[in-house]
Figure 1 (spheres, rainbow, N blue to C red):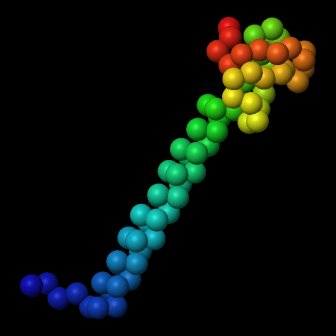
Figure 2: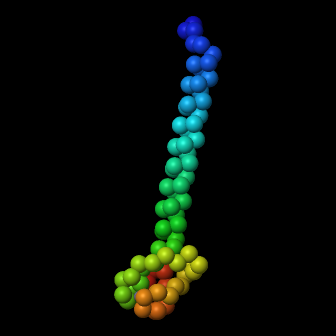
Figure 3: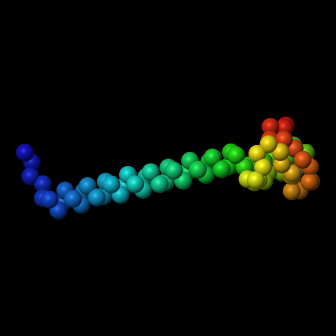
Length: 74
Ligand SMILES: [Zn+2]
């Protein structure tokens, strides 16, 4: 069996744990960012203005031309 010093093994184990945790946090943030953008990004069919509206899900008012429009209206 290969002999590894206990302090080296502990350090190695801790480094791997930190890397996994860091990667998980990064992926989670990326996923949430994409989710927020898909659900709250609106594009006005009249003036093609893009804006964020997190309060409404189905219908929204364009802040530029004040027109009401539905989510999938083209
Ligand atoms: Zn508009």
